[in-house]
Amino acid sequence: MIDMEDFDMIDDTLALHHRLCDAGVPVAQTLQARLFRTETDLDGMIARGAMVRLVKGAMAPPDTVAFTKRPDIDANYLKLAGKMLSVDAHQNGFFPVFGTHHRDLAMRIGALADQNGWSRDGFEFEMLYGVNQPLQRELRDAGYRLRLYAPFGHDWWAYAWRRVGENPRNLGLLLQSGLKR
Image (cartoon, rainbow, N blue to C red):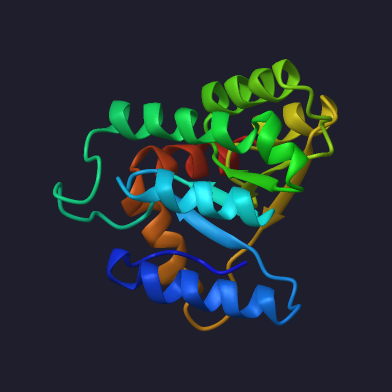
């Protein structure tokens, strides 16, 4: 999975993804729902039958290139999720991945998938290990594919802290998860 952190690197990042795919390397791409250009980028990935993880976006790009208000980002996330779960996407062999810790978004995505005839193993949710464990269990118990990831290595703290910086509610989710163990 190629991550997408810096909006200045999108063209280079997508070009790398396409070169690797064309060379037969199994690779997937992350796209940020907060960026205005993502809908166009996603259309190209759906046409390719790619695997894409949709996230809200950790960095705060300027308002000339991105949605800056949480309701607008969430609305665009759902709009893009609808494209990812479209009949055309399914027919092209596209594989959607939804990076979210928010129950409302996850439930609405599940409803979109059901409405468009996607099986619960035809896409996946991805969440940070230990964050919002009740939702993780709920998704698993409902038969959805769920991938958990954990940062590790020398820079794990910087990565984890960026997730909190992306959305301060993530700190609350992390603390709640730790207290419920």
